[in-house]
Length: 202
Image (cartoon, rainbow, N blue to C red):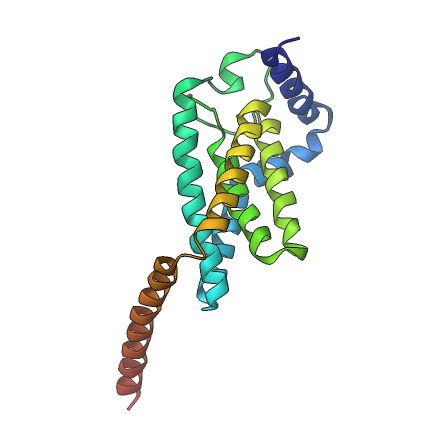
């Protein structure tokens, strides 16, 4: 059995679970499509706590995702495949998606890059974010829009990018300078708004 057959067989096994346990489909649809909203809100909360470590974490996660996304696009030049619902018969397709190259999974890369970076910086309970990212990856197969190979490749690219950026970026003085420059202008904007509000209330 070659890798293509393993890829298809594993996809069938996971995707067919939606037919066997249809009561789970709404949960997996939500995870596959809308969990990204939770991630976005978390990123905003971490950033606007105005904690320097949190801001460094978000900055590193964002740079790591840009790197992972670029590597993913390059990988897609050397290998490509359409979504399973386009290439295979009798796929349990639960969400709408336009036909394009699904290798690797951008959605999975986004989650794994951020969630693994959260764990690198905070450890401990932050491992729950990694498990959430795993669930998101599985959900993309469950709803029929990605093969396991799309997801596994996205995970490895994300882990490599997040680890590389975590080791390299926080120790650079230029990174500290960027955050300090942002905070300088943020403080000025907040100060101006506070003064305006006070003048209006007088």
